[in-house]
Image (cartoon, rainbow, N blue to C red; front, side):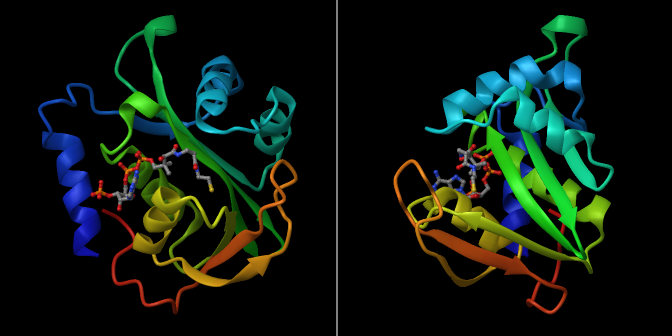
Length: 176
Ligand SMILES: CC(C)(COP(=O)(O)OP(=O)(O)OC[C@H]1O[C@@H](n2cnc3c(N)ncnc32)[C@H](O)[C@@H]1OP(=O)(O)O)[C@@H](O)C(=O)NCCC(=O)NCCS
């Protein structure tokens, strides 16, 4: 998709972005930073235990977008958790630290997820219908709206929009 290429180019070239993140596996040592981002990103945050449980599953892809640096100064920009149930990958969580958004970091995480899982695999997710930034991101990766899950979000009672990405969903390029 040519629109995704535009975002990736910005990640590398935007003069505001001096530090290009590396996409690598998320580790338990990242959890304090993950929890910090999670609390800034969501009104109802996952607990550390929820991350640890998902990350412990062999069928989980857990990714970190890490800014350059050494040791404890190495700052996390975002993360993504995707778990395989039966033969479908479920995108469980993706977030980018608010000051670092609109620089292609989520695109880099999504592209790495699809590359690791395999572009022919089936993916699904739930998202709040009010979350236009996330829905736009997912649609650019070939996710399509397939229905609503009534009252899915316990904090607000909001329905969830169900999205699927399959090999036949019309995607011409899965990576930026
Ligand atoms: C959704 C989220 C992960 C996107 O992260 P990001 O790093 O800012 O996204 P990117 O810079 O890679 O943006 C990729 C594309 O997504 C879309 N997008 C992202 N943020 C957007 C916004 N605020 N408004 C409209 N479109 C947006 C755009 O198409 C964008 O491409 P562009 O910048 O070339 O226009 C981030 O906004 C976030 O962490 N939100 C809070 C957590 C959340 O809602 N996660 C999803 C739960 S289902």
